[in-house]
Image 1 (cartoon, helix red, strand yellow):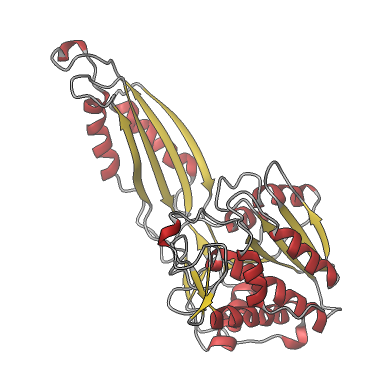
Image 2 (tube, one colour):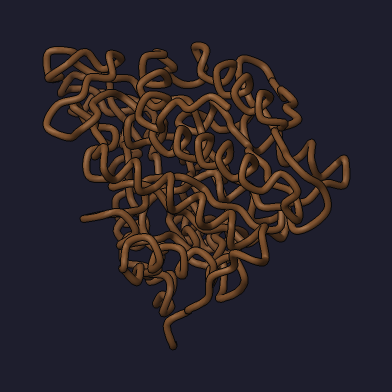
Length: 388
């Protein structure tokens, strides 16, 4: 077996400038390693997106690690202490774009999987990895397409651990047990352009839209639940006008986004919005984009195993949260899978000088290995779930 450490593998991945959706060689490296320890590896590429599905063992349950090798652009290079794709180590930290989100976790998954199948070559069930290069971008040809392929073949995922950086102050203090839904809308309001000195000849869409917009912002969508905050609406962009002060705009374009709990379904939001726009008699068109439905993983086999593994390896009892943005868990949960997210600290993700603690990365690898022992090797199962 290749005894590369998790830090060395993370460095090799960070050295690949895999700005979404380009993989830049990360997955070839990972697939080669997994094949070397007996995994069956299947590339599943769509368009310019690289994906692979790898598995070891057979039967059920199927426990899957899900992760991504793509990263967001580094931004201004002058803001970085070290070049973003040089994977430098200083003061106990590994620096580089993707160190925390989420090449560090991907490295931990692969090293932990190598160690586990070497220790337990006849483990029960199936251990799998689903890796994509299209998580930070449009997320159309990545995990979503792989899941569609698996479903068409009758394959299923029972338990899924997504390696997104869920932790806050220290590894394991927070795990994600679900995510809010994300729904966007682009609303275009038509008007009549004209000279501001002749208001009777124009129809200013800004003036017409403002009362409706105020009513939309004042709307209470729900009150949230014990697991989810109340649904929120944010205006992310407003475009109108031609950049001069003596011409009214011909149209107004709004970009809106809702983050919503399972108390609402997408058609309910859409209906309330269109009803309001109709009530204000606005000449509008609307284009919707659903990024993902909300989901939550209730107390069960996976959640109990993750909590117990965190307690076993760190001594912490993790907070169970649904806060934050979306993850690829939104595509896996509808398969009927239990999905939990557990990864390193998110303090520097998407920032200049993104970094991960070497100690935290090493501990994460151990934690992932313990989780596999619990779920796929009955003799090593650990117990202990905090009372509700």
